Length: 267
Image (cartoon, one colour):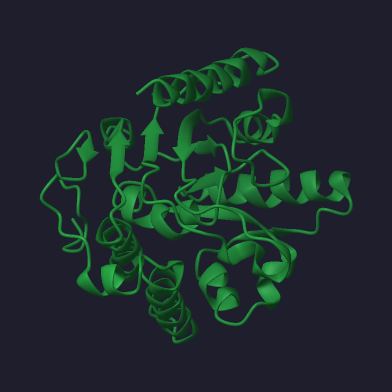
């Protein structure tokens, strides 16, 4: 058990009402730059740690947990559900498939699941040329894809992803082509199911609501406004076996994520 894991023994979590909002954040007029300054400081420290070869499980959880606490210091509320499904895997590899809404999920996901799941990502190849990001992604043995040749990308994910799963590690895949503020099932492809079937493992659906950060404009696309009034959600379903052509597993994962969005919208 990592000493940095915030959710030990929990199946769910909700930010307590008594978590204080940062005074500095208030004095800065609740500016997004308070959030991004702290977030990028953690990002740089994580990259340096990765470059030195020290970005192990404990460090991944520690740095990512800083981002969870940062959200709460900015007045955001974090909700987690289904952590028992991760714990009950007992370290068994799965393909975790989730919607992709913002950069926040990649900043926070290690704090949520790394205690129970050792995983790799599928990432855009261009991110390996970003300072600090390169060393972070390499430490996770991430699979880069170019997104210019879908056939080659699929081959890379199936070949390298299968090797990772056979080694006992899981894969986290966002089957949408880009980040979106809403969940659109028609854009949620079946690459995760194909990989799981190839490796003989289950898929585990992950529903995310991370529009606490919104997409910016132009060169500030990745530095958009923050919205503390928008709650952050991570919810995990039970593992789904992939049988036959995998369509049933794909539909079940899409249905799970869709129901989560419907519930959050009405909460």
